[in-house]
Length: 229
Image (tube, rainbow, N blue to C red; front, top):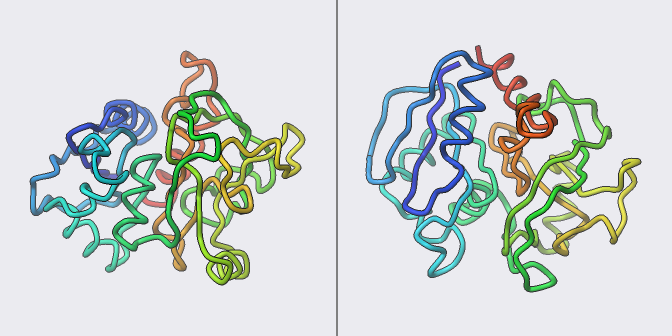
């Protein structure tokens, strides 16, 4: 699997994603600067976490108009898989590649801690190494991670199986107490209709190696390697 990681000014998880991809795919990904208007063909594009452009306008809003994003959107439209993590998820909603929006946490505070999430399906290129409904421990670190969509969009997401991850209790049950940021329906990640684009607020790359204190994030990268190699 050949991957590319898009790097914006303010990205701070690009190297973490690079390490996770290199460990699982056996080759380093391309690191593509935001000003590039094109880059060589790849099997996967990753938009990493961070604070692109300092989040000065709105999280992901400025990055969505970077020169490189025109190419990312075009390739996504032709079927190239795209993964957005945290700020990358925000960028994907700003470009319209994913429905909904990420707004301020309900607490209006930055949250940085481990949470429990469950994959809603194992039938995707991103989650084929996970068991649907089995809880995972993955870190979050965001101020604007509150997933919002109107009621019709939320209904459509549920009906089409586009919810990728939900915040949950340790036993896998969904509750308000397990929701760290107020996200609608405890949504922690979503797919596009074709399940070729996925955005998630938790950071799988931060727990993708036992030396980091856990490896619940690693199967996500292994899923992609298996599906795209």
